[in-house]
Image (tube, rainbow, N blue to C red; front, side):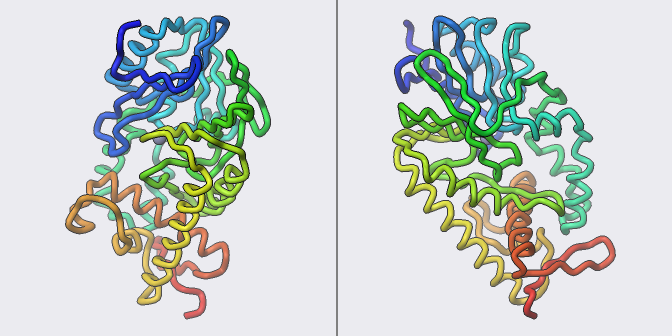
Length: 329
Ligand SMILES: [Zn+2]
């Protein structure tokens, strides 16, 4: 077999194809492949972008994969994981996906509701159009709902020597699923657990509590016997428990930071995000790329919703605008 820079063998008949993500700070998506003479399985795909398609299909060709004999599992609906599926799918490809996000894609109403919520949360009206244009979902997404085989907690997929069990891990998205190979102690973690960077936990509506879900899902995977974590981005790693502890601590520190910010005066989600500390190479908030301001505001909001639901903070409405304040002030 000729060498391919984007393909790495990580286990017996288990490969990672590194798919570049143009204009994304994430840099690459890790697409995993279980190769088998019967049927093979791809886990996650890449943006709807030529560079992603070319890299992934040449990696698959290099490994001798026939897409007609291959099925696709998607950990969650974000564009970097999902959006190449329609281009890869053949009439005989089974697409495995979760129910909540299949329904979301079937009933997709565009980004309108999200933008309306962002406006209420203080995101400057004049920047909404630019934020939408910079959003990877609108740049590299697809308006397509798969005719998917729906998987949920405990369902299993067997390909070659691997049997994966679905572990529902809502938080990063509402329907996120990780795949657990119990015998080999492998967890394909999607964007639920990453190393070096913390998964983005966003909220853009008034009824969900994604951070609460996320912390529960972290605790859940922390109980699994795992020796190898295969994440959606960056490198694989071994010590899942330490990473779960670090991420839990990270969000607790964030919640404290936000309470300190609100201690001065009520703030909108956008104002809160502007005052939080971020690991981004920019001199000040105003210099953040618009897409990063968007993700930061969504992240601030998931923490604000968590604090609101546990009674630490309350919302104050003035016209259409929402600000948050400490409950005991
Ligand atoms: Zn991702």
